[in-house]
Length: 125
Image 1 (tube, rainbow, N blue to C red):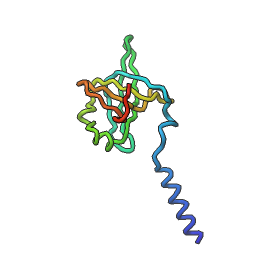
Image 2 (image 1 turned 180 degrees about the vertical axis):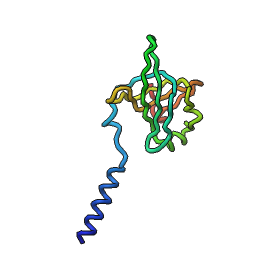
Image 3 (image 1 turned 135 degrees about the horizontal axis):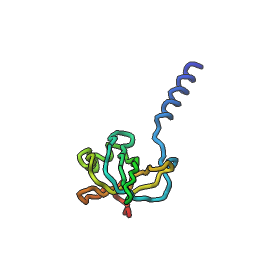
């Protein structure tokens, strides 16, 4: 009986470690917008991400980590690796991260003018 209890507890703990997390712990409610060039794309589950190089008017470069939805969700909406091509210029808007130079994507304006929003049912400014 004790062995069964230990096995159940271990399996439950491992499932909790793999559980999906809320974005509230890492991102604020403040919406920011960053223009830049895609340097790298990590196209995977549970979240894809984009490394975006922003250059300000003085020439200073900053690199933003833009976290997005799951790869499978992006694919269903037509956002493939071809759309997020390295070297493309984009404008990303989203929830500012609690860590410097991070955001959770809400809207992206692609180089060709096409727009992707993370929740198509809502109007995103």
